[in-house]
Image (tube, rainbow, N blue to C red; front, side, top):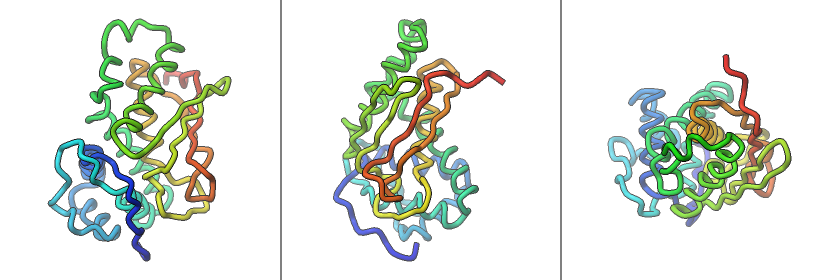
Length: 213
């Protein structure tokens, strides 16, 4: 990237960053990941990923630089698609087993009404980040949809954009909803973005699942 993002002093646990790097490698290959890390100004991570632990050591600035490099290298459409896929993989490969979400696979949870699954499951996703990282997330009921807010968003930290750009977070939410609902897909739309000048990054999560194709 043209300008390296200064350190934020805010951190993800190493494990979430590791899951993100593995997910990117899965969707774009090892060489593609290496190119992204070079472009993001993070060559030290090539073949040297963060450790698999919950220590809060992966700076939001570095996480955001990776997201920006994806968009710079592949363009808005291509970068968005890769980030969405990677976000889904991050949840599927690791986050669904984090504390607050671990019970979503239990039979007692699976037989709950869909509305209850969402009412319990969406705040549980927010809790995973609020308790394991410096990303504070909140959820509010807004009638036909929930508003999922990321305060101090690591996906766009220190960057500016003329459009919403937290696509990995969108993909992660999409896969999380699929997990808590036993396989249904939901419409998730990012409505505000800190990189655009908004105070926080907000996502509208619509309560009705998408039609089964």
